[in-house]
Length: 117
Image 1 (cartoon, one colour):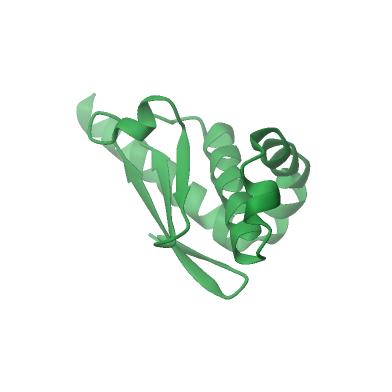
Image 2 (image 1 turned 30 degrees about the vertical axis):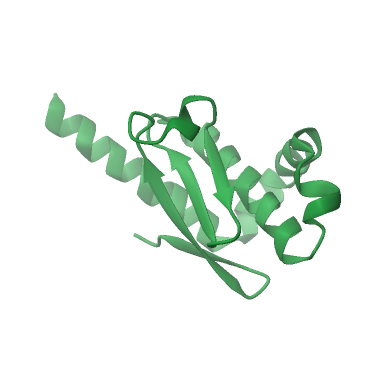
């Protein structure tokens, strides 16, 4: 699985965690730690469209941090969400990394669900 994405020349690692092991995920579907270049996604997300949006939302945060606009824009969740929604159809079509990550994450979850059934 491709577990990283490059944002303006900086590589961010992407991990999926269980909210039982990460209390930040109790109230969030995902988050970013720009200081250590990490994007964390909530394991409980199984819907491909939701996972795509959450990943794009965190990618928008990363773009703000990497462009030096973090203080002004990155903490405005409404703005970040709006940009993620607006770019989703265009970005998903053109950004192979986002498409592949979502595809692999959902396939991995489907395999786990098959094992449990």
